Image (cartoon, rainbow, N blue to C red; front, side, top):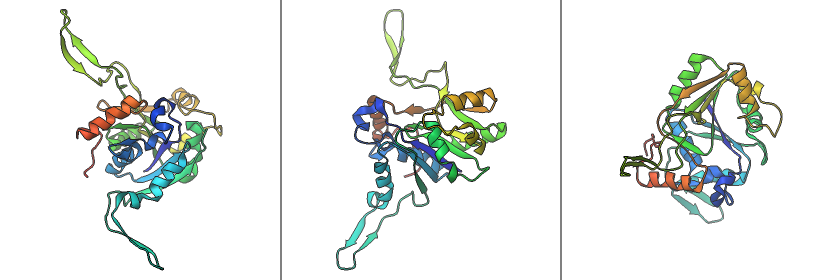
Length: 262
């Protein structure tokens, strides 16, 4: 299935990084978080990507245009017939990446609407945001979607805690401290969606429309929104502190979303 990734937002809450680059290009362990998301999908066999570009799109275009330069050893012949030989291989050689201009100021519904032309009529597709990772089973989500036959299935996740959670006894002694607890009492939309082609019928031709507002409300009204509960790790990257947290997990070799082999 094709994977549509929303990569066009300005990421204003992560201004320390996004002043200079689009949020999907913020590095985690030396690679853009977008790469991590794509590696997760490819691990489950989905390697046809459609990237909805907007803010600082040229940086994402440049990254993929020069992907061999970024990942391989190379020899350059500098004579009158210049040539380049790339020596290394990489695990992304089977990927296809469509770089779609969806406007710098477009909202999410319109960005999705603009890539309809890249998804054949009647074909389902995968959809997510370019700023969050999880150890989610993508194919289990697809199975849950097909079992219900709804227009859209979203990954229902527990929001990551932004403050440390402590267990304290009556005397004030702290028994446990969990830096990033999962808030068990509620679910939110964690992205990692599975969508029928019918979703496009819910998307107006309006650059100012957020997918998470009227289209989602209309899906709920029509009984066409399903969920796949993901009870394990999920983490957005909305703030500089969250970017640091993800980098620390990666550097310590305990990144839960790294399901692929090197």
